[in-house]
Length: 115
Length: 111
Image (tube, rainbow over all chains, first blue to last red; front, side):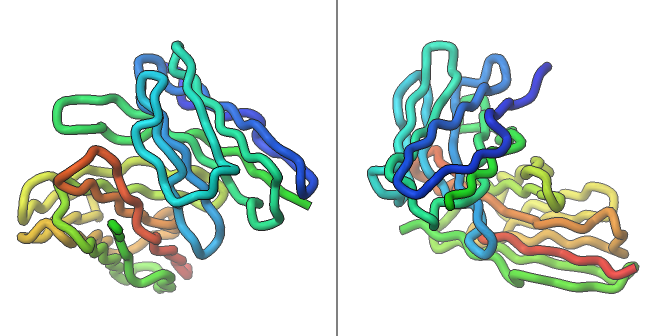
């Protein structure tokens, strides 16, 4: 079974630009979550999508948005990039069972550098 | 809001010494998961604890869930260089289905 795939792996953007990151979950997983990871800040939750609907949202500004398609693939978009947006963006997929999500399977991440 | 804190943030140990990381939640948790992230890698699931006072073992790793289901710990016996990485806990409150990740503990093992 293929794992979670994130593209691109690395990205360099200029301040003010916008960026779109892609995540393909494990087949059969309908929940996709996005995290921002920076040194010293740990894993900051961005949002979770399930069946094309945003189910949970973290404390990030409106510049961060996402969506999920009918095949469960997800994208996240960051507009008007700031230097502080430089980070590793991780996507995780999981199954939904009675009692909540099962374990999260993470992708390799997209390393975004804003210059 | 929901917070999951981990201590210590960093830990350096000599190979062969034991290591423990602690996870504390501001609210009661339904369950808690632990993940390991190797340097340059992504978090990988280790285990899930569900019951109050539960203890689970994986070889040299021992995981505990507190009686009040608000804290958890991961203990590694006789650390090896392969244990290097950052260990995260992730707790799910009784209400809702979102997991909140702890701040992580970065473990360095000195050979």
